[in-house]
Image (cartoon, helix red, strand yellow):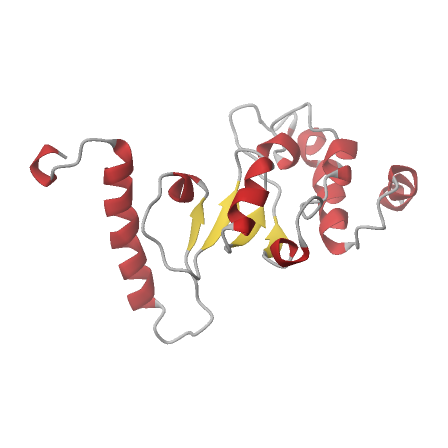
Length: 161
């Protein structure tokens, strides 16, 4: 870092992101639809990225508004709602989170999807199923349903079928 005049982590991260993005662009020249996806900290660190970069929100749902307001496409997987290893994220909490709520129409159009995340620190073969089901199923329905389909009672009926 000293040899390159970098005095902080963000400078080093920007170097890495810039190099990685060049590699991705070279590998995907044949595809006009291939795009780079970065975790949101690349945005927070003010790294140099192309305008067509997609960001995945993971730290907090509040980043949905920040990134979409900046004009970026976003994949929603905020840990405060859609992390399966967070036991406080019950299936109802996960089901009731709508990633586009509170966003303008233009911002909402930048939300291109979502993903539940499962990290392995607290997971083993004895608790895998109860950590994943029915919570991942609740997020799947949320992502495939319009905002108006949001009643947990009828959702539970569907999930039990």
